[in-house]
Length: 503
Image (cartoon, rainbow, N blue to C red; front, side, top):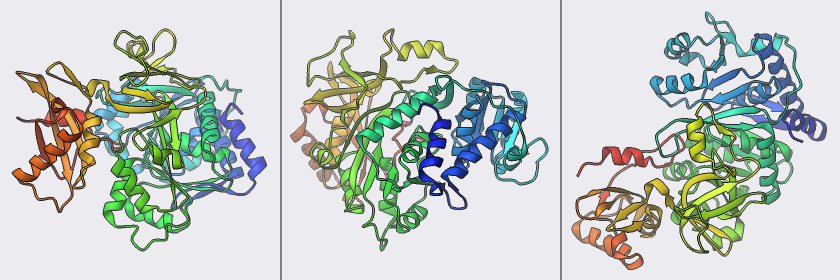
């Protein structure tokens, strides 16, 4: 199987009338999902869109996204799920880069989004949650009754454009093909398979890479995916209803824990909790285990640009909680210094990777593509890490590294130590200018509510860090806060922290 069409046809033949996908109000069996994707593809072509036309998607999580996503691939179109939390000016910037021919969104966004579409001459406009036309907007359901010709589509053609700003604040559209996504999904399945008829709960935003790659893995294995717009109450309801596997980012697990929504809910049937990203602390993982005592932890490391790079789970995870795992099959990973040469085992350098599913390009940004991909196809991850006994350890972002008095300070290393203190919940360390040392480290810390902030307790925390790390790595200042700025995926936004910093 190399295309989504083949994936859906395989699911219909093998899994019959099992439910493949659902949300709070709708569901699709495997045959229904295949039929919906085919009908929507014909409907999109029936609007008059030519092969290669680009569709922008703007909506909170919904089961409608997956059949539409598969339909665009079947029709030879490209799709870009946009971050529905962005301000209109931010969306306009992405739409200008995308030069979309079509937009699909919800009725409540039409009035605010329409001026941008008018300015950019977006021809085809589809409303997802209205049965009746709204001015120039075609109801999504009407696409099922339209007819257009469907060409044979090469699965290597660009299909998906996911915008990411990473930690740079510069929005970039990452391009992948069908074949790349299917190949990546097969690698994940080989590493950490689910049993047939597994029920997976996914609440991460669908404009994130996990919006398609996670459900695709479940479809290939005959399971069911429940999609929901994340909130603790609904999370608890679905878990109580018999979910086997939970997938999310560290911030989502933390929010559920703090809400108390799982109090009294039977979680004994949850077999695994998947955690994406590289920023979770050991204490975060322990809290997840406390929430789901019968579940194994599953951790994936990668990026929108790279796809899966490493994975770790179960007892291996527990034995290497600070590691993001071993390199996935088919991935060529190297740790390199500033001169581009590989460093010795255990030394810190930048993580670079090459695989069959590393991004094709940044859409419309050849200069940024050239900065990210070298001539041999290696992607610069922007992460600093080290390899020890085959396990990868991430010590921070390259652009986050602090140079204090000529010495390198890796923020994540300091954050892990702070979060290892029993009264500290979360930490974010940034570098700020210093007249003497060039930069100094500042730690923003969320403490346990029982923590008594005083000169004595701050010195105890400082002593805790100093007992583990060299003196030059100890933050010059600890600032206690109630919350930290975060991006759409729940990751701490250090760009915002540096922008807001006042001496």
